[in-house]
Image (cartoon, rainbow, N blue to C red; front, side, top):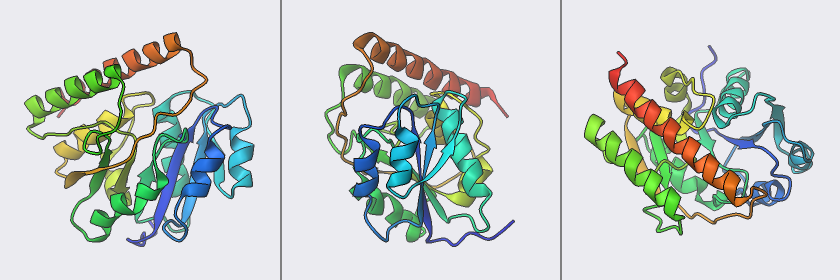
Length: 233
């Protein structure tokens, strides 16, 4: 397998129907901080992919719906490159995450202090909704009770060393992808940390009922992953 360069950074952005905001996200990524940006178009029915390509991103498509499915497709893409990156950054395409936080996420990895750094909205005192706060509290409290590690957030904004990411053997194709990564990181002995990040609630095309449903599904999948890996060998 080709040897990754430890200081090269690729950004993976799973995106579904984010044409209205993806361009601004891509333009805000600090220049010269990343090698490439890969946008995974997860079955969009709008011009998400075309807008991303116009902004210079590499666009790959994953028709199978699901946050985890999109992330896995992005991982497969960087794994197929002649030289994979040293670090992979995951972030949202909706504009909720601030791309200028990328250097802060990556710095502890560059300094060989950690293998996985989670961007914590809680430490950044972000204005989370009540359902987000409640879901975070339940899931992180359960992780602490079972695994003995205190996370504050399950944010999608994170940076991980590429070799560590591949070794985790990520599998979840849905909302459980994020907590699967955090739990597996603890079980495999990765050095994990959190750093404060900015979070900006973005306008969404989802109605309130769809948002409530998505939050409930995400919470249920997070709990499933926590219990599943607590009993897995």
